[in-house]
Length: 153
Image: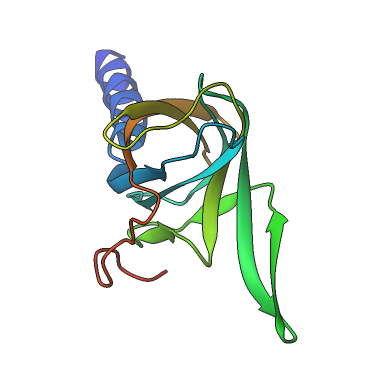
């Protein structure tokens, strides 16, 4: 009986530690001009297990939406998505021109050099959801992420 309890405790500890192992690389948000009400947030995410990014929020924005940009015919289209798949051990890039987060209805100007909290909601295959907060540095309006700084997904 005791062996079963220890095994269960160990299994629970391992399962809960998988979330803590989600790696967030090179997060950043674009600075805004004083009257601007939206901005983008970008980063690279990698999980040791299959999970999905199903939401995000920030106290600096009325809402945060997940978007995807893609070519449709000869036009670049942006649309909101319900989730972004994070396959096990594969880096997923959130960047201009692909998946990214939109900070909508900003409550204040985002200034280069500031940092904003961004809470990510992750859903496991068993539908359990967990949140993690990342401090996201604000980069200048003209900032461009370096090519190769993220692996493609």
